[in-house]
Figure 1 (cartoon, rainbow, N blue to C red):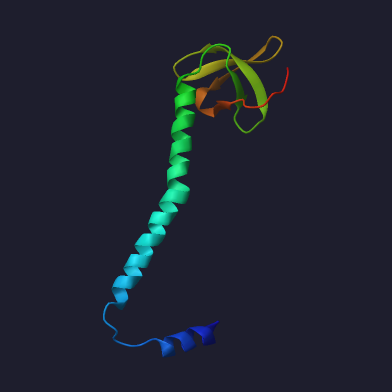
Figure 2 (cartoon, rainbow, N blue to C red; figure 1 turned 45 degrees about the vertical axis):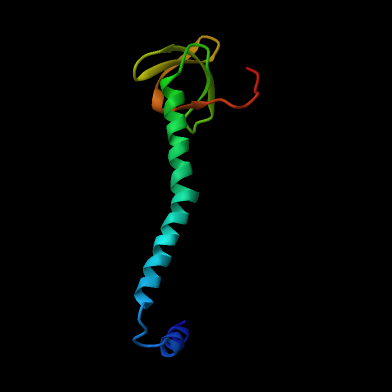
Length: 107
C-alpha cells in the first residue's frame, strides 16, 4: 500500500494549476450524491413516521417499537397511546415508539 502511494505521488505532476479546484468539485459532487441517496430519503421517511404518529386514532393497527408486539389503538393522548395487545391486555406506550402495522396477520 505504501509503495502504491509513493508511486502515485512520484507520477503526479507538481505545480499543476487548477488541481485543487478539481478536488473540491469532486468532494462537492460526492456530498450531493450522498445527500440524494442517503440523507433525503431518510428525512422523508422520518417525516412520514411523525405524520403517522400525530394522526393516530382509535382502531389503528400498530407495532410497538422493535419488540414486534402487534396491537390496536384504544385511546390516544398528546404523548401516549393505550394499545390493546391481546384480549383485555392493554399497554400504555409513548407515541414515538409506534409504527404502522403493514402486515396481514390476523389476531
